[in-house]
Each structure stands twice: as C-alpha cells, then as structure tokens.
Length: 120
Image 1 (cartoon, rainbow, N blue to C red):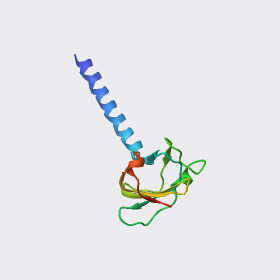
Image 2: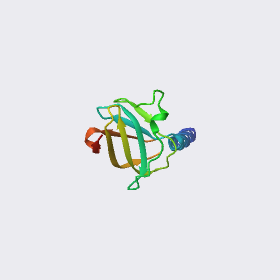
Image 3: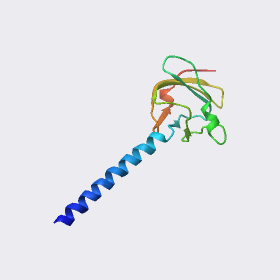
Image 4: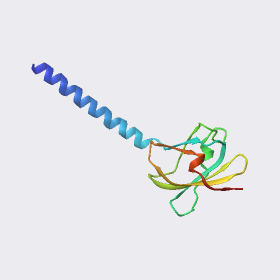
C-alpha cells in the first residue's frame, strides 16, 4: 500500500512539473496569425488598439514574404495585449481588423468577415 501511494505521488509530481514546463514553453513561444481570408497577405502590421501606430510588417517573418490562405505566420516583437491589424493583400486591397487578443504561444485567425474598412 505504501509503495502504491509513493508511486501515485511521484506520478502526480511529474505530471505537475510537465504542465509547468509546457506552460513556460508556450509563454516563450511567439504568437501566430492564421490567414483564413480568401487572399494572400503581403503586408501585416499591428498597433495597440485605437492607436494606428503600426508596427513592422510581420510578413518579413515568412520565408516568401507573404501569408497565403490557410498559412500561419509567426509574429515577433509583441507583448501580450489587444491589437488592431492593418493588412494588404496581393491585389493591393487594404483592410483592418480590430480588437485582436494576442498571447504568447497563442494562435488567432482572421476571416473575410473579420475585415473592415477595405479599399485600395
């Protein structure tokens, strides 16, 4: 009986440590944008909500400099927060998306229905 309790305690401690390590890795991992729009995006910038102080073009993080439909893009230089996005697709259409919650290790997606203020 004692060995069983010891074994269960050891398993519980190991599981808890594994969860802590997994959480720490997720916090260190970059956020990702998943493009579910119908277009290839060539310029993707983020700004703190309402500021329109757009950051760097995150598409530079992709090997071909563009984010195709159903492709994910690693985002860099961001802290956790709520952002607005400005994106330009391959056809030159410029759109915005608002109030995006971005967390380290998290993935957020945008679809056509999420885009506003689209024009050229």
